[in-house]
Amino acid sequence: MQLLKNGQPVGEDAWQPVEDDALLPPEGAVVVSFNRWKKERAQLHGSNTPVGVRMKNDEPVLELADDINRLDLIALTFPKFNDGRAFSQARLLRERLGYKGELRATGAVFRDQLLFMQRCGFDAYEIGNADAIGAWQKALQEFTRFYQPTADGRPALLFRHRAQAQAAE
Image (cartoon, rainbow, N blue to C red; front, side, top):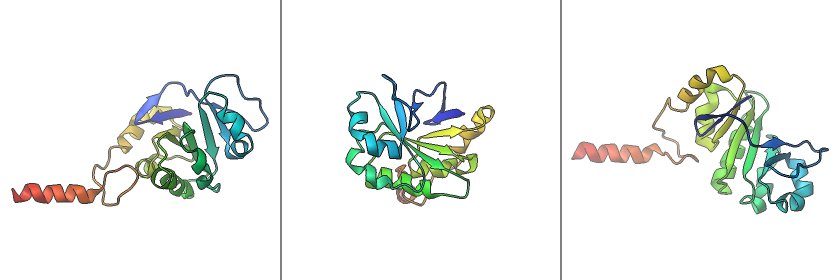
């Protein structure tokens, strides 16, 4: 699995996924399931290591609200290409909860959806084909102007007003 973060390939992922029944490592950044996070959040936050949460697309991201500034990574899962609930989760995290950490797309992450994922607030993607990294990077730059306001902060209405002002000069 190749990790693409902020449009660039990442050599080695610093985050260690920890299963629900496994012991937490003594050091290093860890990613735990949402269920484990709910059960052990006090212990996880007291560990002085970066903590991330891995969420399925049917789990309520609003339950992270009280700890949103303590989480360094939230990984949202796309179980199949035609299930877009993680898009909604991402927007809730970025726009309603103001999440500033790494928001990672995992699972069925496809090049055709990459730009839409970015517009919803994702900044990291686990991709299956490391040989096609150039095509993935290109997908993030296919469009430069958008009409819909989203979490990436690039509303086209602003561009339209600027263009009209420049044309009037």
